[in-house]
Length: 202
Image 1 (cartoon, one colour):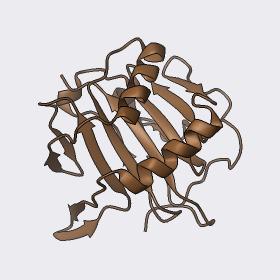
Image 2 (tube, rainbow, N blue to C red):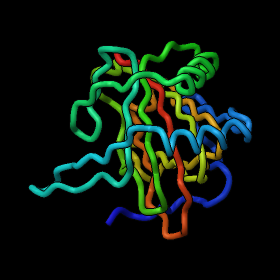
Image 3 (tube, helix red, strand yellow):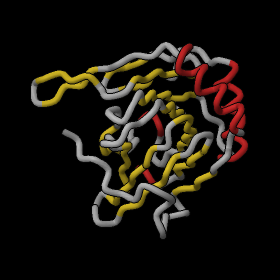
Image 4 (cartoon, rainbow, N blue to C red):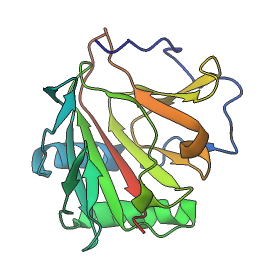
């Protein structure tokens, strides 16, 4: 079983490396965020992938949906996914995050965490199609979950950000190379959360 989160339940860790992460609470106003959460949950073509570990296949503990420009094929949970088309809501958010990141994104991965049992294990987004030092913009709706990061070479160096409803977390160039991140399972009851990570497939 994946280890439960060992980071603080409230607030952001002290000393968060701001050269690598920028957190923007209230990026989307509450009324719009509530509307988008409901719409994404009910209208997104969610899929649950499988992953192979030790000669056994396991269901990925979350649902995903890949969207983007034509030609932005991407490996989701080890399987190549052709992009679903952009929706008006996704395009609106894309334009909004591009204004902050000063980067044009051409794709987005949606993750649906249905409850506290849904999670994503330690990883870094180092796929070659994202380029050497990708910038990724992460927008969250719904249940607050802790986004944990740790230094790959020194696990004792770790931080946590509470990703709030309507927030934006900008993962800057360099983070994926030397750090890894996760959303841990929670022993506490959790409501639904939808997270969007905007990316540039090159």
